Image (tube, rainbow, N blue to C red):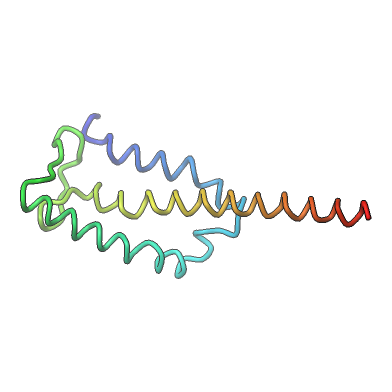
Length: 115
């Protein structure tokens, strides 16, 4: 079970943040915009990780990864990390922004009604 820990944590992050899709303007509903935000940054960090792995600066404990590796000895979990965590961050940001927008709109309505 240990070898699935990294993947399980990533899955838990997705499950926990999935409902946030409905509290804001959405992330998954705008797949192209989301991909344009996440993929270029992920590419930079993947390249950075591959350099660190090749230079033996960065390693992964084989006990906690599945053993599926990309070229350059990068665990598949690390690639997924660079997609999943930004998605969760975008979901959180959009949900907070959406909720704050609703709060602002309510305050404005109350202020107009009070006049």
